[in-house]
Picture (tube, one colour):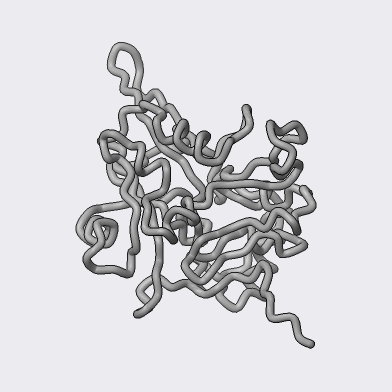
Amino acid sequence: MSDDRIYGLQNPSTKGVEGKKRYAMVVDLDKCNGCMACTVACAVEFDKPLGVFRTWVKVVDQGTYPNMQRRFIPRFCNHCDYPACVRACPVQATYKDEDGFVLQRYNRCLGCRSCMIACPYNARHLLPEARMKDHEPFMVSDKCTFCDHRVRQGLAPACVAACGPRALIFGDLNDPESEVHKIVNTHTTQVLKEEMGTKPQVYYIGGLDDASNEESYLERSYQVKADMNAFKENHPNAHFCKSNIMEPLD
């Protein structure tokens, strides 16, 4: 008897596909005041252990004294259209479902950390061995899920519901009446590390500039270049990459 269960596959992008959903987050950096309500709501929703974060707010100080500015950058899993973590998982514990959610099957995870290394957005963590409740998963990879369990019931993600200044807007990009669709199509937005070609679905308004302040994928090591070349050669969706030209390994 055939096993119809499908693990770890990257479902094709549904962005713009009629009859399909494509969930995305818009972050208005001009509205974020650094209250951290999103991180607290996330911690409560998922009984998050101390020391790990599904959602966090990066604090960046720009300029020189006395002309300085503090900026707050909410960060999540980007639920990429072409997630590197899914490709990296050796046991297909990480997968992308038909609605675009990048999710985790704890029962298949080995805790090998391959997805954590592959993720260019530092969006994954390993759940510690010591948990408050006996039934909670431990020593496996975890991440933001866009609160898919809430979204499927018609609710907003916990972080969005808790955001007082409405800096976080969530919805279906394929729905022309949704707020996220209207914002993405009428405002200038940016995504983190666009050069990666992962097509992240978290869009920022207000200009990231150098605020992400992380090592660019353009500064890649020999091993990462070799891995990306192999991906471009073998992945059926490799055409999405900014450049399909093989990279010199010197």
